[in-house]
Amino acid sequence: MRFQCNQCQCILDIDAQPGELVACGNCSSAVTVPPTPTSPGAILGDFAIVREIGVGGMGTVYLARQISLDRDVALKVLLPTFAEDIAFIQSFINEARAAASVNHPNIVQAYAVNSDQGLYYFAMEFVDGSPLQKLLEQNGPLPVDKVIDIASEIISALAYAWQERKIIHRDIKPDNIMITSSGQAKLADLGLARKITEQNPDGSAELYGTPQYIAPELLLGHPATIASDIYSLGATLYHLLSGQYPFTAEQPEEIVNMHIFNELPALTSVKPDVPAPLAAMIETMLAKRPAHRYANYTELLEDLKRVKKNEMPLHLPAANAQAPLDPDLPDPLAIPEGESADGEATPPAQGATGGRLKIKSSKKKLTLTGGSASGTGVSPSATSLRLSTAGAAPAPSATGVSPSATGAAPAPSATGAAPVPSATDDAPAEADEAPKRLSGRLPVIILLVVILLAAAGGGVWFFLNRSGAGADS
Image (cartoon, rainbow, N blue to C red; front, side, top):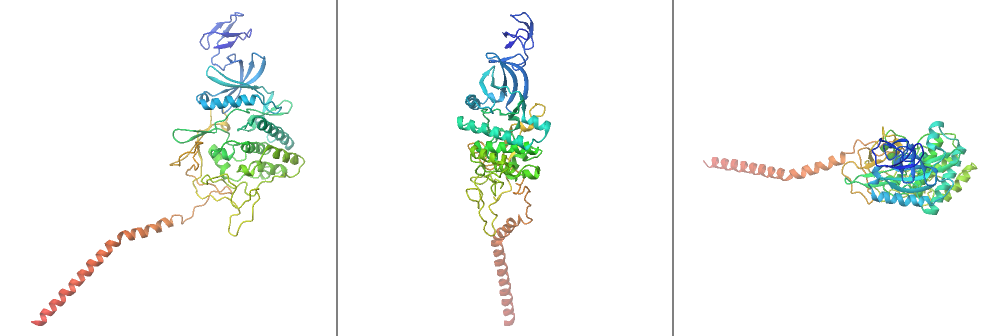
């Protein structure tokens, strides 16, 4: 193992046991061999570990010192389980290298990606500041002006990354936005590939993301796009302004289902002092279907400029932006029937539903297993979740997610309330059984009637014959 002497800082490469006391060959000081490859003093590649500074769903982040350039860096070391997936690691390396070529004042600069001692790591700029999540926990909801400034900086960062390298973030959340000591917002973890879905031998799929901010289409197995990043940013802004997640429930699987089926609580009803223009912009970002969101970052930035002047955005929430998705449809993300392509609802015909998507089946619940990371130091909001189907389900699609995941719980209606089953729901089935039973017994009944008629006829013949014989005598 390679490690640093804590006295003279020279690098030691000694074949010794973890925890063993050895002598430094340079200054003769007694040095303890680090117990693990990521303990303080241990060296991974060009980086000497200083201390742990955070834990997330993909791995642990350390403050480290880059030996060759003598500078502090944040070193993210991936969980060992990721190293077992060769395809993921290759994607991780490719995207990290692409991210390292993106230089923007609102993006945490990526420096290097490599592996050492079986551990894959990602070195990036060390930001003197705090994650936005920590500030939110300490201070509660942020002022409107501050949120608008953060939104402007992060949208600019996302737009630059997309235009320059076609990079999609995939996991925008307060934990991945750093606020520097000077108040500048910086987007972290850009370029770290996420395994959105991975098919398992049993037909279930692994889902990696943060339930409170994840876009509905990712839950249905669709690929990440700038639209899914816009949704996650919208959920983040909603949280920053209100102090609440867009959807709240005790279990991650409940939150996931709410993204797909439940109507978004109006931001102004949760936080009445949020200006209407800002609330409208965020609700457009949080539309359930990508086609109802902003088409690109240019449109979003233009509307943000209007919002900053307290003017209503040009792109208002579509009439059916919160209509629930139906995973059983050929295209669950299609614009609901009765709505024009530009997002404006057309007048409904008499007796129609006004374009609201109808849920035809009550079996729509997407079931996730895999749970909190209690005792691991990982926030439950950053837990990897296993998406599976309950009972017999259709074969998974190429993405590893069944197009119609089923479960026992009924799907909520567009208002969030569960449908009330009709008392006569089973009547048609029972009515169908009666003709079947009758048709099965008909031959027997006919046979009994024939026998009875024959017996009756025989009795009459016998009586008449006997009566005739008596008359003759």
